[in-house]
Image (tube, rainbow, N blue to C red):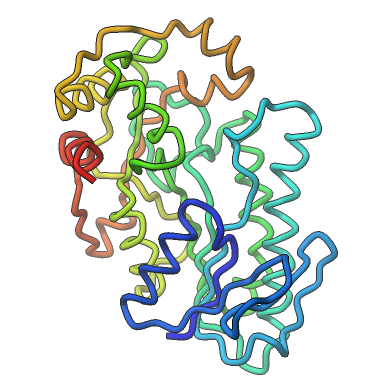
Length: 296
């Protein structure tokens, strides 16, 4: 397939581009700087600028663009950036795809399990109601920006990724450093549910959605969510390090501000749509995910 990817410089994007190319696909990368190679196409999503004539034939598109929700404290200005960085990129890409003589068959658009808000112990599937906090609002407007593509007949898969487990970058990259120093432990009460996915399963699931008819929201999480206490305990065991030093919720709030609620909040999410479509997870539970993390 010939696949257009936005957000290729991010944590998932870097890995996905390499994964797709290794699998034999041709990847066109959207960049905001000057183009450096033939596989790059410059765009300016803030200005709504993407020339469809530069894209050539497009079989599929993957949109991963968006400012990191955990990269900065959530000031009003950064919250605005979180929203705009998603809606502007999605709308610009969708308009360009619809302007093609032959629009692609599928658009896989990044999203997040933040759609569900605080879930407590309730098992959450793609059919569960939306939450009412900031991240749920972000997901709502982000996903709504894809609606013109779906209305035009493009199959749109909304990839609601959970907590991404990768040894470098992201929250788990920082956690691994602390655990290797023997400073790891539960975050907050430890009773909150975490829904993880390993990087290999994330990449495989995104590629799966390019070729399988799974439209609408799709939870990208392992089939067996676990409590934060179980995750930190399994990670400590996999690294042969103690995991006994709890981080109080109030300390997280002081260090991270409003974003701390995303860490201490509970989301017991399962990948119902992926499992129904026949996707097979390489790391289906917390033990497999943390073992892979420790040895990757």
